[in-house]
Amino acid sequence: MMDKINGLKISKLGFKPVLLGDFINHEGPIVSHFTDAENPHEHYVYKWVDCDDVCNRWLVAKTSEETISKFLFQQVSLFQIINQNEFVYLVDLDSDLDEKQILITKTSDLPNDYLPEADSYFDENQYEDYALQLKENILGTPNSIVLEHLLNEVLSLKRQQFETNHLLNLLIKQNKAAGSAQVLAEPESNYGTSKPQ
Amino acid sequence: MPFYYQEKFIEHNLSDCPPKNYRAKDITEVFRWVFDEMEDDRNFKSQFDKKPQRYLTKDDAAKCSGLALSMFDSLENAIVRFTFLKKMMKTKVYQELGTKVSVGQITQNDGVCGELNKDGHFNHHPMKNHNYSQRFKIIHTL
Image (tube, rainbow over all chains, first blue to last red; front, side, top):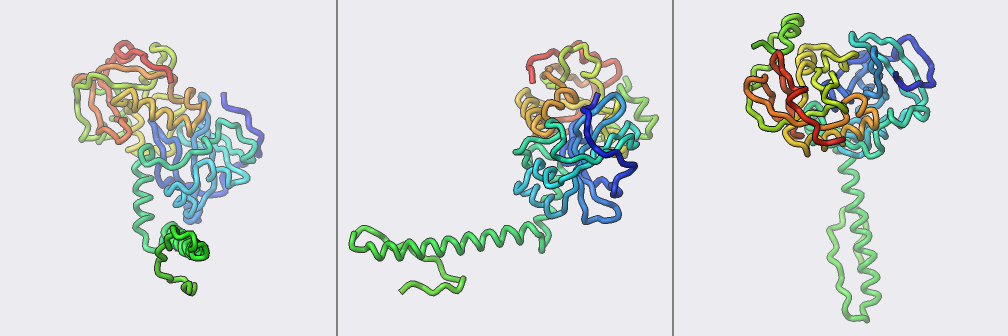
């Protein structure tokens, strides 16, 4: 018997699911990646959550290409992907893959066992080859969102390092009377900040 | 001797099942998740035989994979994989995948095995009249 759910029964999904591949599989899919046939930029994660003698129940959470990329680079977890949705679908499929019931329910009302652990981050050793290939494809994309984000992070960190070193050197010079302080080597300034006198 | 699921291979036109790169092997110890008792008929039942079947597609690759039994090359790998899936499925993992680890021997007469994955898992297509429920024994509680 499956867990009882408070939700709204609907007749069909609000999208046309197309399976892209399995993220996790053990004698059948556990977590899978879908897109909408009519809106390919809209992505969905299907997660197995329950079953009875007739149906398997799948939690279906909407996501995006950007979030999937962040997931594969461990910036968000599967738990976070699901919880970014206020509402999720619960789809009961029988052995012929017929939809016997579809519910929309508040994510906050889901049974605890339906959600993965909070630290459900991507793990290359446990995910299917499909996920690894997807990550490789992202790395190979010249204008990938993730690369751009990472570059921005690196630039920001370098800027912070330069400013921190600059401030430390000012403090050291002010206390030079102590005799033991060493001025830190400053990296080349590429950020328009004037060099200290 | 035919494969245990030979009739299913034919019924569903799975001409490439088992996959051609699968091999008969002698393995002293293989490990499989089972339920509380070795007599549980779910223990050595493939996904295809389960009710309901856990699929999201019924293409030939999924059907063939669904007719295989999952095995592990070590107790440690069997535990690590289960621990990971428990992180995804919480207590439902015990309902769906098993509660204990069993160990047994596979010989070249027992069927064919796929390549070992990086997590120590491999697929096994058994021969007819396999008696794994009598040959495997429970050694660890998950």
